[in-house]
Every structure is written in structure tokens, then in C-alpha cells.
Image 1 (cartoon, rainbow, N blue to C red):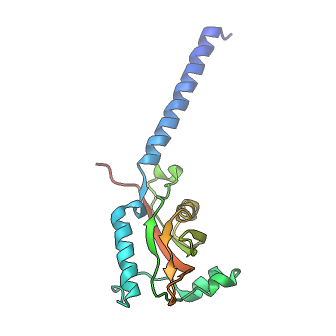
Image 2 (spheres, rainbow, N blue to C red; image 1 turned 90 degrees about the horizontal axis):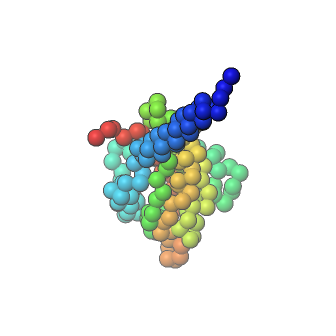
Image 3 (cartoon, one colour; image 1 turned 135 degrees about the vertical axis):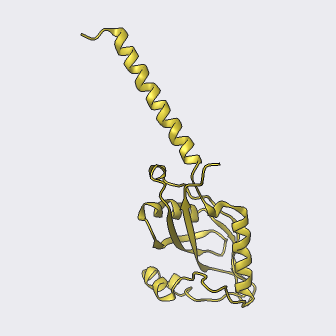
Length: 180
């Protein structure tokens, strides 16, 4: 027979475990990262885009999206397929990025993942649409897509100096950072 006193101990223990689990998830969510939120990476990306604009070739081994694969990825949106391989007078520039949230359920296993996102930057500098181009682990696709959809850019410009839509690909690397 259970008395009222034993049941309140059990309830307290359940509440304590719940609070501990919530706290652990909050701490864990803050301890995982993706490199894309780093301001140095934003600077490097903008410098790479500026070199591309000037016609300076990339270093050997630099990753580029395949035009045919991009056409297949966006096949249902002809207006976006038309952007594959288009060169602009002035390319996009990153204004702000959103840091992808590392899926907390993967942090225990210390999973790493690389997700490349193809996205369309509209004339207002916002991401109109985004799709997974390549992924090493599909469990990381949604956080990568959600983050890229919140990126803001200075839009690309055409020969007339007017803003025009542009297609870009961005790899996002997920990793649990080393302990200090």
C-alpha cells in the first residue's frame, strides 16, 4: 500500500529528473556548433566571391557544384534552372547568417555531417528557396535548410547595375566542438 508521503517523494524525483534532462539538453544544444556562424568564415566567403567576380581562379581542390546536378535538383522550377551557371557583374555578398542548430539527439554520438545547400537569393537579398544539394547524413538536412533560409545577402547585380536573382551553393559542416 502506497501512502501519500511516498508518492510525493516519487513525484519530486520525477520532477528532478525532468528538470535535469531539460537542463542537459539546453547545455548540450549550446555546446554544439557549425562553422558557418563564425565571422571569419563570412569574411572568407565574401573574399572568395569577390575573387570569383574578378575572374581569379579558385585554388586547386576547391569544391564546386555540378551544373547538371543543379539542373536536375531544380528541374521543377524553370525560373531557377535558368540561373544555373549565370555569371553576374557583381556577385552576392553575405550580410548575415543564421547558425544551424546541431540536432541535440546526435550530439551524444558526436556525429559529424556535411550538408551542401543550393539556394536562390532574390533581388531583395533574401533566400527565396533552398534545397539539399548533397548530404553525408540526412538527419542534418533540416537544420541546415532552416539556417540557410535565414541568411541575408547583398543581391547580385547584372550589367545594367540592377539587382537580379542568383543561385549559390553553401556547404555547412556540423561537428561537436572539442572540450576546452
